[in-house]
Image (cartoon, rainbow, N blue to C red; front, side):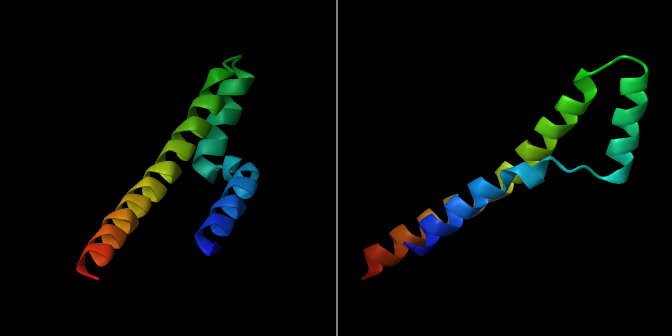
Length: 73
């Protein structure tokens, strides 16, 4: 039950994942002043993809470890 509650906590905290680094923020602000709105959303999606890839890798390793553990016992 604990991994499920941690997963729910992760999902509920996604609203804070829209934060950006200072360089990204400067890039978005300069592009918005030029009238281009899609740069900010592209950066946000890129950040979330990078974040999700780490969790997918960790989840996959955890599943493989669990299957190997169950097989040996």
